[in-house]
Image (cartoon, rainbow, N blue to C red; front, side):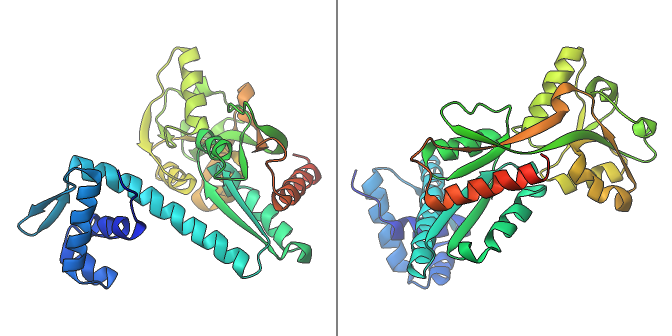
Length: 303
């Protein structure tokens, strides 16, 4: 198969998103006949039909849907390359990409990075942050698409160098009127008679809760699946369920949402986060500076 060019892929994605060649042409500032010619050449290159023409537009075939997923990823990578190179062209001499779990980003990581960038000595360093679950964060570092990963240290970090970062404590969050709200401490089995709010199934907290419920011989009853911490807390405020979240994060909402934050006593509820990177010399000078800063910030905070 001949090489795929990014322009054709970009036009193909635009057509798939708009489901209409004329609208895609208007969006991309190009005539529709030129897009049609590009799409025909693309189908010839891959050797299969990518689009089905309908009366009022087009739909991707199964092969087209697969190509759409790959093309979107390729275009995103190309955009990152352009942004990174532009950063160097304008004088940025260091580029560090961090992938971190939602908990790390929601708690202390942004403040620690802001303190690092406030130092005039670091004015030529650019830092990008992306949220991912632990397994995908570590995969990004192993594959070289990220410099550093920050995640719960129960994850499989085989082959990576690790440094201790910060810690937090998981807690059961309930509405003030909930039967569990009067407790001062709880274990997971204490909560299993009540509906829970689920975080995304791939999250480490979700996995650990399922494991604890299985060990207790009881099902974990999920009433709502929430994509973000704030969404989960809003469900709790509505008195629909309880949720297990970092106490440090939930406390910020407790007064406004009339919530109770009750520490979990399970051994794994005290979480430690690790900062992971590829073995030396895989760490750039900028990433090394940031790593040392984050470790010092965690130490100073007593984490």
